[in-house]
Length: 238
Image 1 (tube, rainbow, N blue to C red):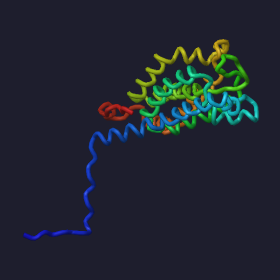
Image 2 (image 1 turned 180 degrees about the vertical axis):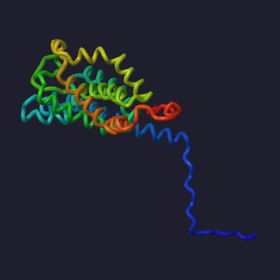
Image 3 (image 1 turned 45 degrees about the horizontal axis):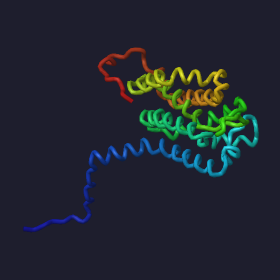
Image 4 (image 1 turned 60 degrees about the horizontal axis):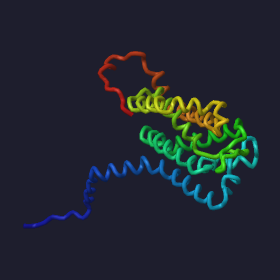
């Protein structure tokens, strides 16, 4: 019996198991959500050790040249443990939903982050939470970006009209809608809430959602209102 070997033939690639594929998918989906959160917790520890130096130095101060750095650093800084803990839960829920829905979490986060910071720098009221409960002339906290996530999910669901996107939008409206509306009103300033930061984040989320759904809107405008056989096509899920 002879054995014929072909040294030039490529070796077949080993098939990956379903568990490995799911693991890689979970890492790609949730790692971008967890990394900024890890930075927030690390900087909170550093800030506590440094006597609030990071918040004093890198806060966003509206209409102030020295406060421009806050556009980049404000979302990763927090005034207290409860402030950070509250934002952590919402970041995981809403940020995770954005990542699951779009697979473009970094793009959405970066857009909301920068646009909300710029808007807040222009319209912000001089307030921020300090560990002792007093107020001062800057803003810190990730709640603006979180409001952007919520607004993005609502607009994205309404524009794309896809099943999962609509379900996510309904979830956000049902569980966050009322508190979001209250958080964007000036009446909450007496409760040490940065309502202008929340409003800036919501505006940024709407802008980013509108930009990222441009192709969907263009395709919808270019399609005829009713095409033969369209009833037989299954609706998209994502």
